[in-house]
Length: 617
Image 1 (cartoon, rainbow, N blue to C red):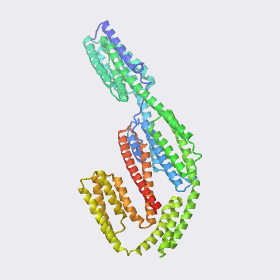
Image 2 (image 1 turned 45 degrees about the vertical axis):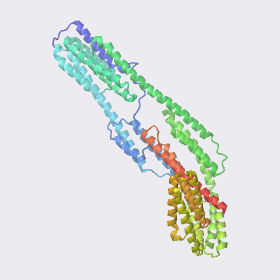
Image 3 (image 1 turned 180 degrees about the vertical axis):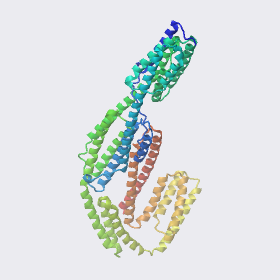
């Protein structure tokens, strides 16, 4: 290596060092600025997690020694307390519906809350310790870099042949690059001192042209690769990831030495242009999010205004409140379908919405409390009917007692609802007395065996006719279906058959009818309804109490179905249709809801048939 070079070579080196100095402040240029671009924290979607799952997820986050997930920690905390509050509200609602006083309700303490607080405290401690450790490391890095600068100054000011210090100087440069971050306030001054030392050293060292050109060539290759990477990530769909990768490329650019003068401006402009594309897309991404959040705020504000303007002061019946509740729940479903509002206003608009809903449901609760007295009056009336039925259940005056029992049953139907906790008990008491009487009456009428045998023969004959329809070819499907319904009507008109033959003949009849229905493509629900019509006559023959009991059973099943439908509809609101898993769950729930609604409609038709039977009698 020739330690002596021309002044021209020294000037080139000075320009190289100047370029190194320019690369230090890449992040401060208007085109590449990152300080004004909003950052986004990657936060897992925890809205579907249970509280135990949230605790487990938080524990996994705490295993990350970097503790850089503050956004995730906050999201876990918010989701946990949102779930806890919703559960307490549901418990409170059930407590009030069961007759409890709102003022006496004390929510049960959740053991997981203490564990959550402990984990949050652990996170705070770890994060504080890590920050302290990082600051200490930065201070140590500052001392190390200051030491390197001092050592470089010694080499620059040495009276010895400075060319002999090239390897040592390069080792100092290598060591400089291996040292981590320093405090922000010292960064620029440190870089200026470092660059000054390099400039002075290379001015003295006079690197020979061959070595200098080699370095320029290697640096150009590195910077060209950096430009290609920046241009490639500029086309990625994930703009947040692209922006983060760009910051790493900036760090690599700063650590790479100068290139030949003729390529210097060109390579820099190429990198700057690629960086500008990524920065604009990154900024645009968050601008779009902001627009969507503002639209969501407008939609949520409009919903709040609807709920607040809802006038329920004139409601005086359960029907009024039930219809109004459906309207409010529809608005709540709409609320859940709207995304987040801007962060600064999201909590505020939610509190407004929650307050409006609470006003409505508190008023509804007050109405039901006032109605409690009427429920108790109905309970007293039904207890009186139970006492009357129990006195008559052993009577053998079949005709007169039957008429009285029927009158008691009709009077029972005119009485309204009773407190829920007594509903099953009082009904079982009443129906047990009625059933006992009618069972005794039925035993006394078991002398009708010959008529039942004739009925059995008639039913077998009709079954044979139904089976013959399968061979009919000279009628249209509609004509065959009409004939089939005539046979079904005839079958239903026939009275009782011997008890031991009852199930067998019915299975034969049902198999024949189902076979024809399937051949004629009759709807399954219609078949079930036809089956119920067939059973209805059998129930009618056992007395009105049998029909009343069947109606009560159907109404309980109907209410259970309505409750299931409401639960599924509420659950859909907690899922995001934009999430792949969430979309699949929503479609599955919608399918279940439609199935439940079909079942509910079938029950409504069955109840209507029973009520028509009452009117006929």
